[in-house]
Image (cartoon, rainbow, N blue to C red; front, side):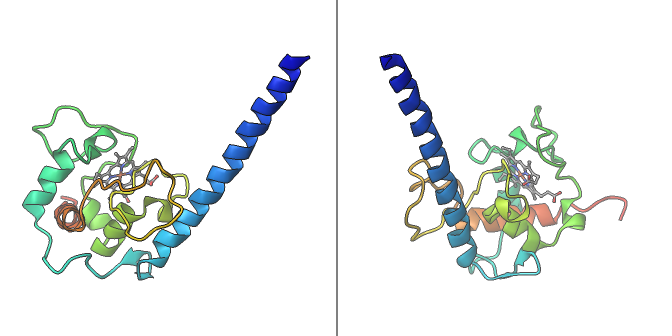
Length: 159
Ligand code: HEC
């Protein structure tokens, strides 16, 4: 008998917390979107006044902090292992504009609501953030600009 009550509470709790976290996630995404001027699927205004540095950007993309290569292939031959969860970044500068790349890095879920790509740039002043994300910064605004600047240089050799 007690076991049934126990199971009931277990199922009830799991359902409840699932619905709740879905709600927070929706809210989170809306708040993030509200912080940027998004036009034509891009963020046109750079996040910082200092122009991005593509050399530093390349180092970030190949580095462990952002771990882009866990999911992407890129023309960085000195790194042995490249992932293929996401699209190959070779030629990305021919396929997407800087503004689109910036939006992809800041809000990956803008383009794909189920994206597994992490949101790299912390957004200030959010309330009701899932504790898992609270206070976590993967990349700084300047890092984002550097990465955007590097990716924009990856032009398709066919073009
Ligand atoms: C956990 C896996 C994962 C990591 C880590 C990751 N990405 Fe992604 N990325 C994806 C996936 C999957 C997509 C495809 C679109 C989507 O689902 O969001 C994507 C899409 C992209 C796109 C758009 C590609 C296109 O062809 O339009 C860019 C640019 C990009 N990622 C850059 C990066 C950079 C730069 C980093 C590191 C700072 C990074 N990603 C880290 C999974 C990842």
